[in-house]
Image (cartoon, rainbow, N blue to C red; front, side):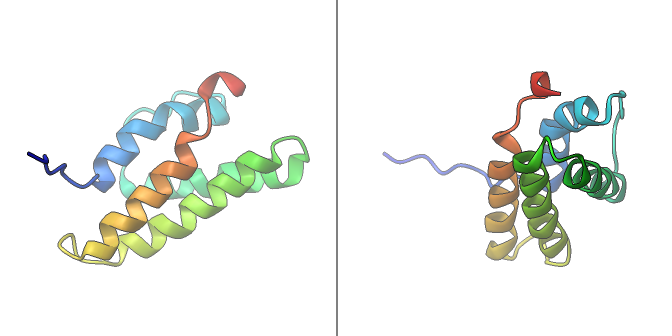
Length: 100
């Protein structure tokens, strides 16, 4: 019998990836709201885009930011939202906090 998994929520994604984002920011960001999380992603993307060292990470932050911004505009019951959150999660999951 196949089990049905619950889609990832935005709050779960934020909780899952805030430690990596904190490491990238070199500070404990604590608990982030959706808006604060997106702002921190933008700041990390900007910083890494100009550093020349973390180009893969900058691209991952950019992709995740795009997916999350699009997902935020959708109703929680919209199946597209779950897909966008999963894509953002995949991009952020490729990073390891110990890399920063």
